[in-house]
Amino acid sequence: MFGLDMSVAALASLIGVVIVIGISMYDEDLNVGIVGIAFAIAIGAIYANLDATKVLRSLPVDLCMVLIGVTFLFGIATTNGTMEKLTSKAIRLAGGNTALIPLILFLMISIVTTIGPGNIATFTLMAPIALIIAERIGMKAFLMSLLIVGAAEGAAFSPISPTGIISTYFVGKMQPQVEAMGQTMGSIDSLAWKIYFNSMFAQLIANVGGFFIFGGWAWIRQQRNSTLSIDEIAPRPEPFDKMQWLTIGCIGVMVALAILPGMPLTRSLFSQTVMSVIGNGKAVNVGAIAFLLASFLLVCKAGDSKAAIKSMPWPVIIMVCGMGILVDVMDKAGGLNALVNIIASVSNPISVTGVLAFVTGVISSYSSSSGVVMPMFLPLVPGLIDALGGGSAVAMISSINVGSHLVDMAPLSLFGAICVACAGESEDKGKLFRQLMIWGLSMSVVGGILCYVLFGLLGL
Image (cartoon, rainbow, N blue to C red; front, side, top):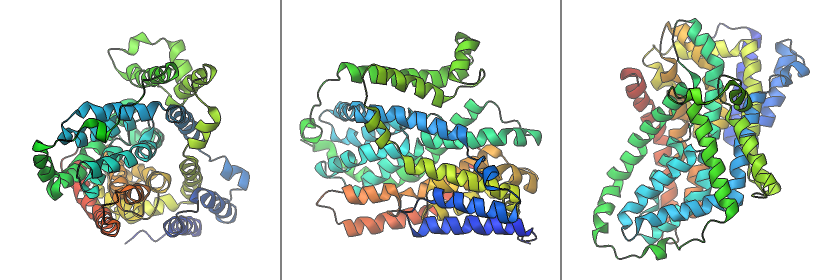
């Protein structure tokens, strides 16, 4: 009934992946990407007739290079002070109206995450600032955490940010298989942005809805008579220097080149030669754009390459690549098909969205959402469509992405841990820890219901 009629190789690969995920849940300091590669080599050689050289050829080079290029470019923007000044100037837009500050922070984190640095880099940069501001304006750290985590995770799937790049990579790999089943998916660019907006919408409902329900609306109403000066909240930053303006210009160019070639009205502006430089002649490669712009900034002395390299999220890059190798071996050994059969046995084309969101949410509560869960579950989508006899690929992808990221408020994750660590001195951090833990773990259930309704029943 549960798809357990499988080969020894498939069973071994499935057990191997379960062990690796278990290790990632038990020891957060251990990079499971390295462990995943070791398991892939052992399983491949012993059970799948794959020698070590063949296993290592499974490295997702395209994905790795895009992640390196994008995170390096924004490493320059972070280490040369551009991102910090942008943040300060954005917060000061509130003037004397403190009720606007949460909205500005939400929008700022959403926009900055979208344009390239990604959820981890943006959150690490802005969460400490946001939580200090929360104490100054009399807002509970739990409420501010709901907003800033929701903003960062909602915008995480921008196709020009690291988490979105991971998602888009797997979508591109599965697209031929899904379309061979008769399901039209459209262009990879439009798919990537639809998945982004699906994630943003789900996070808005869950986290922003939670903000208003658990005290945010009452706090906003209390701010009518606020007398705080914006200089007390966010001191005026120094003006941008020439190198920082150049960095802003390069970020703008990257965003434009990532979006405009895929739009019908502007596609004709880009020649075949230009498209070959920034992609494969048909589609844009944001990694290529990032390498070109980063090199330009370095030549212009606008950034420090050593500092930028140190700021890059190497642990996540290694996790994604290592798990990618392990999942590829698991696929060749038959384990991926066995996992598909297990999930399909308790689902139908509609309810599978809720099942995927719940399962990925539970695992992500104790493991890396983008480094472990996404590389493991996204490749299941074509097989699930085939096993269930239908179902929307975009709905399943969105459910995996949303389910795995809604739980990141839990203090066992990077986001929740930063919220606890950076909360103001007046906060009861023990109470905040419990609040974030309860919220994060409950999101696995809420995420399952939400994805079932939004992507299963409503078909968004």
